[in-house]
Amino acid sequence: MSKELTFEQWLDSEKKRDPAFGSHSNGYRKILYELYVEANTLIEKKGNAPEALVKLRLELVNISIIELAKLTKATLNAADLKDLMDVLPILESQAFKGKAVNEFLGNLSAEFKNAIVERVNASASEQKIKMDYSDSRINAKVDDLVATCIEMGRPILLTKLEIKDAGNFDGVNKSKIGKTKRWKD
Amino acid sequence: MDFSDNNVNEIFFVDGAETALNRDQKETLSSAAAHFIECFDIDDEVDVYISKKSVLHKLGGANALAWHVAPQYNRENHIVCVFVDPNETLKSMIISLAHEMIHAWQVNRGDMEGTNWKKQDYSHFTYQLQPWEIEAWYNMKQVARYYFEDRLPKASELSEMTARTDIAVKELNTKAGNLQLKNKVMKVAKVAGLVGLGALFGI
Image (cartoon, rainbow over all chains, first blue to last red; front, side):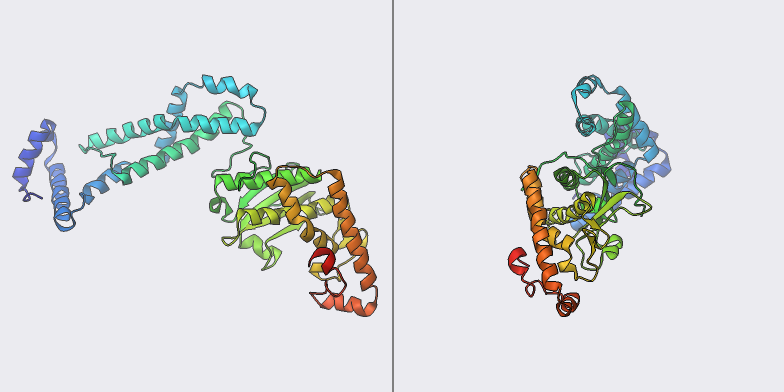
């Protein structure tokens, strides 16, 4: 690791890297410099990634349930339901229809992820922080949010398509008894 | 816990089982329950509760793997409960479920009513020698196999099960007819060999 920069040196370096950096308030610059020092110290001591920055990034991946519900609803509204609508009339049981909805939502994972990333990036950008989605902890948090979107999206779609929830077991404690699965050793 | 009836056969994952089991395992248990109801053509409502060994476990006794409660004056559904035990496999849970479904069948076909079997009271018999338990213990693995092999029993197979129970119960009554032996039946748990049922049922 190179020698730790003084505040002035660090500020010059950041301004060269990002011309918009100069518009930050002094207070915010100082917070970022402290994070830089903390990260530097950790790397010096442990050879680890800058944990403080990761913490900051992880914090940005927290999205409230209300925000997530809005995001889920918007993604579903924008989704093309035609394929799903086409097959529903030929699926005999409510359980199969429920499974088709599960598949459809699974296929929407990428859209949910994009919407989440966009939302997180917007918050990060406000704080002039660059997100690093290659970090496994950040990635895992995003994946959790995608799973929550799918969970929230299921009842929305079932209601919209007038499907009774016959085969839903994830997160639901009761279900109609039904034959949906053959035994596999 | 609300055990009320609603004319729908339902499966409930409660008391920790909802998180202890994954979606596949839950669907498998639901499918096995549906298969057993179909095997026995049970037309009463059957609600299955899958629970971790805790609250519901206490209702069935400390060592119970599962239990069944018949419809009562205030509800018309059978309650079947099977426990999720970390030491047990999904297969053994399904065998326990088959055992309890046999009890639901016995009540549904009218042979079992409380502690009466075909109108005769067996409350004084030990657990192992109660006619309904003899039938359930002897046939539970075979009934579970109906689901594992994805087939329904022939009418003759079901008749064979009940006929075998009839023979065993008749034998039991003959042997237990002697009052002295009856007292032993009441007190001695491992009496099956004594009355000669061991050979018939392997107990």
